[in-house]
Amino acid sequence: MTSRTPDLSAADLVVLSMLAEQAMHGYELWAELTRRQVWKWAAISRPQVYYSLKKLQERRYIRPVGDSDPALGPERTILQPTAAGRRMLSDSLARADWATQRPPPPFLTWMVLSWQARPDDFQAQIERRRQFLVEQLNEDRAALEAIISETAPNSDAAAIVRLGLRQFEAELEWLDEVQSRQRPG
Image (cartoon, rainbow, N blue to C red):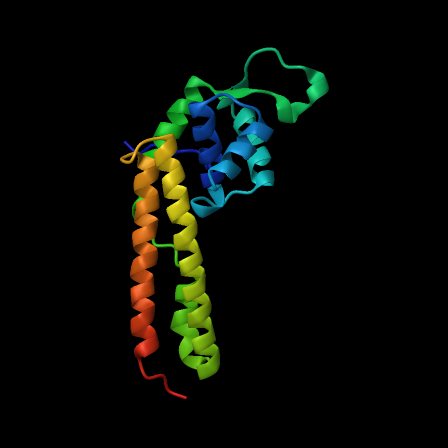
């Protein structure tokens, strides 16, 4: 039996998951996503959060809870998932495409095309990438410390950050190999 899941975006699922963790209003949700540095692990913006909240409410995957003061406006309405919303989140997280995709980072696309770059520009881009990776490593090491102090050394969040650290470290080693090659030009 194949079940078709409605077209919930990754942003919708992030919002639904956060609300499953704790009922909150839109502004509070965005503040928590910002605190957790959402841009490092999901492509979601503040407007997308509010769009997702509206979409999820229209589909009855979330609902308001408690007394809502209309004077505070819709962005201060506390929301939580419905039973259907929790089922949809679980069903969506069971999709095979989560584990079977390779979205290419822009840098890899650039690398494939770089044979046409001027040698000086090639070296400059490699150095930019190296600087970026070093900055990300430093930020993620600090984030890992914060996550461990908030959760535990073996939490899922800590494991994800460790994976990111390893990927950045491996890419730095790879950049050394790339830079050591003789470039035509």
